[in-house]
Length: 394
Image (cartoon, rainbow, N blue to C red; front, side, top):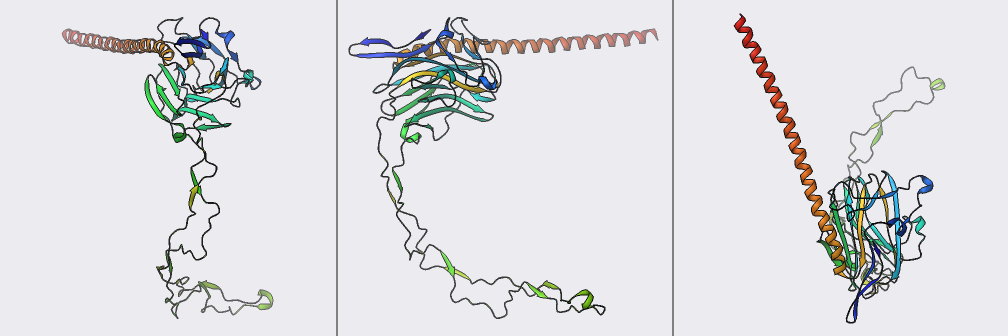
């Protein structure tokens, strides 16, 4: 089911669901398939699927990536809205039927007016959120577009998409410029946008006009002015071999001018350097002074986007099979919680079925081992009987 802008009036306040999708019948008519990589033969396809474990086939059908090693792009539009002055919740669930090896499972929510038939990495978005991995590098992405530039979180957010079960990803963006991220109902990050994202220029900078004074001494050690090179100090590394003599049969007309060979100087002591002493005039390492950044300005509207108009998934996956379901964009936590209940029911069923499958596999293995042991015992018994029979005949 697909919904946009549902209002629930309570006095003067209203709660809105800007977008929701459960991928029931007719989902193809609501979503736009990207052709961004079609000409390269690298555009992947999508299909409706439940995956191996599910509770209710109709309720738990989601959107699944099909082919390995492809780009997958799909998006849907909704009535444009702004989150100004409101809490924004973006939530969806995703299940990796296979280990991606390398790829993403993140959602993009962006402004209206985009060419979504070529939805891809160059399509402008406001927020990108969700799991991403390649080999051992794993993280939960959260990227904000601020003043036309995409900003990654300074440090890496934990990755929770390890199992083949469905996981629920929720992002809450608040008007106080704070962000909260939870996975499977457990909060894994909460913090201020300006503290964890480089959205604003630094408050302070080094003074670009500050210069080191001419009399500033920044060398901690100096040559001892009383130190002098010894008179017998030898700095010549090579000398003419004093023992060399021109051969008796040397003919300068035929052999050229004879020259003594050059050899290492046995008296060589290296380049002389004066002894180092503490520099009494040392002031310290010079650094320009820190000043207030004239380009810095606080912004209490960093969270605000004037235009949200589409939601989409732009993914490259080495191993496909990921299933996306139960997407909701709302300013009402109760609506998001209602969708979370769908995930909770599915997650419980998946865990139960996984445990059952694991137990059945263990039981089958044990049964096989027991049968093999029984057959071996029977063979040994027959062998012992044959030996006993042979002894009786003797």
